[in-house]
Length: 517
Image (cartoon, rainbow, N blue to C red; front, side, top):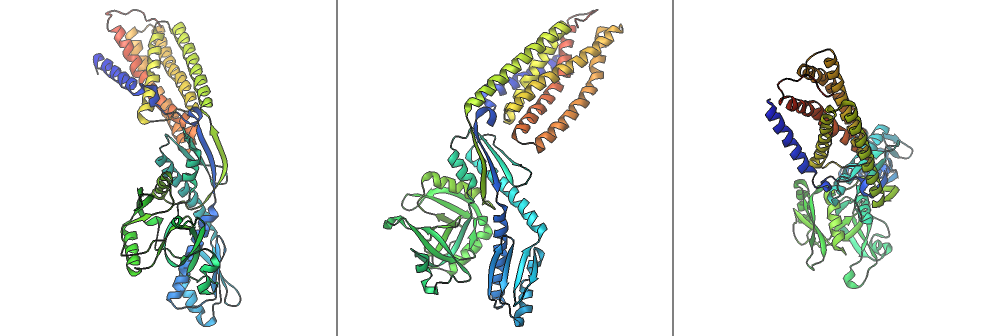
């Protein structure tokens, strides 16, 4: 590449970087600089195990009914076990056959008087706990992204493996953030067998006070149009027609009375199940249950396949939050808030000011040293260093990387690395000049020999930064991000830009006897 094209390339990169950085607000600030909310959550993984155990138990109940095997009862014992009682000797073989599929995940222990206990295998339980935590992290990340928080940080932390750190830079509505993050968002659409009734006793009066085996009692909100705002109860099928897992989309809308509501669209499989169920139960009521509470129970007037609507006493914000929660998917378990910390912007202002002062002082001392020790060649190093920092900021602005307090530390470290690279090159050039080699020959040898050394050290540092970014949390990632961009920019400026500056100066002279270095 000719000298002219080298200069054009450097000027073009400088212009692009300057355009990316201006204005400086293009670079988002992290929690420690901008302020915001930090939450530490513990995932109650027993909820996920309990849900799985209940699902398996209800599946066994349906399988026994299909094979016409009668048992005394099925009862949940713990989050990982349930018990079957009243299996008669005559039907024992048929029961074992119906329960054979449970052997994959559950150990079966027989007891006296036709009793069987199913206990989840330890390895399955451990795997499900890990899956519940990871699924919770992914769901929270989707919900936070929908909230519009810039550069949130959601990461696992702690030695117990069930804690999640959530950092929301710039978040101001803490209550809304907690509601959106912590709501389980479990949606179930189930057929109604009774209700609404003002009390459980009134609801179960037709059944003699007992809850049928395939039903459950679910509370709900009374219809406010009648002036009643208390709790009512419904008797609904234990196994829902469709769940939130069958949703394809959800969005806020208005009902026929122009009140906030949430419309949803089902997936292909969900549409088929919903269409079959509603087509076969015209005239019955369908309960729309969210997080264990009936939101509404409209009458089925015809076959419904793809779309539905959730109505209730929603505000516009509640309808928006609900649609966001449903779109992001339900949480496999509830949370316990271990820590909630609100960081004010004053801390960020202090950190930014101190960081800028530290950077400027460090830069000034570096400039003084380079000019004093390397004379006019120090100007070359200063230009390369300033361009290095500009390209680093341009990288961050283009990719939307967040500047954090550790990131400022990486920024200062980049200055030191840039100077170190130039020192290695300049010292090699001085050695060549001391050996009575020509100026141009000394420059070529200095840059060519040191380039491979710099390449090796930068690659090693990039590998370290990659590990920091992969396994670190928010602040560590901020440092790793700045370090990575600084390494890439430094390799370019210390070898290509610095060499081009020397070549541009020497190109104006026919004979060069000395070099101010």
